[in-house]
Length: 498
Image 1 (cartoon, helix red, strand yellow):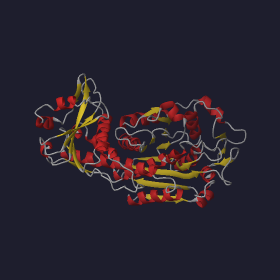
Image 2: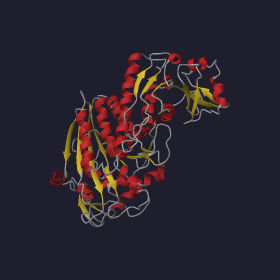
Image 3: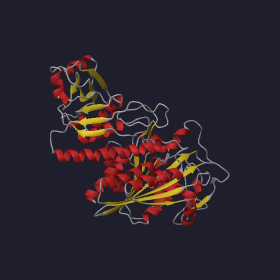
Image 4: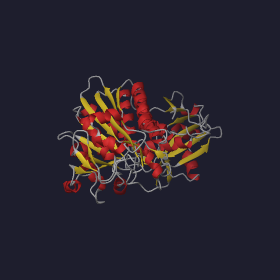
């Protein structure tokens, strides 16, 4: 996508020669009340803006967008009221409420070229993120792709703080939102164009543009080094696997963080083939890989005082005469053996190889994310990621995920499930053989490959990474870019607090 150009407003709202002015509304007992920043617009309407909105049925609920022609009262043609939802008892709203309102307004204004938003008076960072992501479009495969596109957004500055601080917030928030858009673009790219080799090429291009170190292992290098999980999963496809490693070394780096993301560019389930309905969504099975690639590039843009390395296994899980079979035993990178009971539990196999390799760098923290299990949305729905790992770091990541608005919930790794991964042939099996606690069993499997004492977190984004329903807030149908903002916030937290 091409993101709209965002800038701090230099012209008073009432005099701004723009297509539309966005104001916020909140729910109250009698309808929609105006949020901070709308005073000048209300004055132009003679103090009756709330009444006009009420006459049009506005309630201020989340995702509500109401358009009002200004009829010459302002230089702008339209006033657009974006609902923030219910405020807290003290009248405040959360950043996520602002982010969603900004996104809903941006989605409704794609026919406008230039707008000004007063939502930034409430929360500048959330407005920037919501606006960029709400304006997102993935249309490169449409023959009529040259449609209208929101090009410029002016943001009224919050009342507190300095202009220098506002500019810094604007720059950082724009970089974060653009990183999410990068992940969305990768996930939305169809699998005939995004396969292991081409995915690796795009990762290399992003890394080099950011000035980062990058290493790519092809199938021959993977075989020589003993990456049995990646080779086993990717062996059934004519488009052979890759392992990409991207490293950012920040100035005065105090901590080393390893990122690992699942890069299954298409998942048929292999020999344990999936049902045909909705299999097209399995082109999104590389959402974790897209997120960690975008996150390491973002770390460089924001100049975190960290060393961050993304280790990204990429494979296509296909059935063929060369495909791995149920009953095969794979020797993973590092020497552990795994009996394959289900070839559709492939993500954990490529991730295990990548985790062992990432741990060889002796990181202080390891964050892995993947569209790993169908059990995740069954347990937590399509908008809440399951977070597993070492207790303290798991809880830290889950709390930060909720603070970013992406959502995450700490989940246990019950010891009684470990025995269900025992194998009669190998060190462990890749599935338990029963349906109970599938998300947790996958986390336990991955734990077998994490060194003792390394703080780690596994973020299962099987549901949250891809929206199969209608758009809402700043989220479109298709790729969401989750959990780029969570990873970025965790990296920022580590940089500040260790």
